[in-house]
Length: 140
Image 1 (spheres, rainbow, N blue to C red):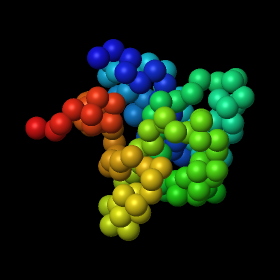
Image 2 (cartoon, one colour; image 1 turned 180 degrees about the vertical axis):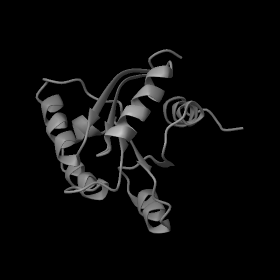
Image 3 (cartoon, rainbow, N blue to C red; image 1 turned 45 degrees about the vertical axis):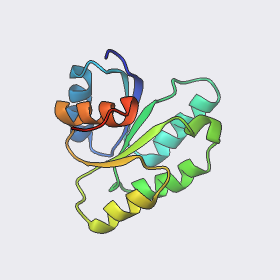
Image 4 (cartoon, rainbow, N blue to C red; image 1 turned 45 degrees about the horizontal axis):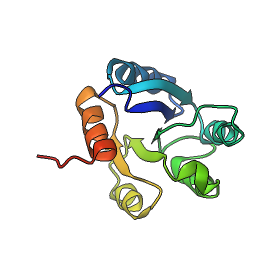
């Protein structure tokens, strides 16, 4: 199960959260390159570079909802306008501390969002993500 996800993009304004999540991702054997962007705007700029062929395309995005300037929902509005050939095979998972039922419902109704997970990441959560979204194995 090595390097199932060759590139993962963390989008979160918290340096501490990014540091912790990057350590957990690095410990998991399924993830290779871990990229961090501290704002939705920086992530969109990065994805623009990917489209130009100047950067590595992420296979998975973990997106925080509550960020200043551009929150996760605003990022998704801009992300939706990107070239589908870029975005079609990227899995977007919201990674949040929000327990607001409106966020949960909104994520379920948004076609761009594959899942919503509560922070922080852990090895069991990552196992579940890999199994559910990259191997499509039934959960027992």
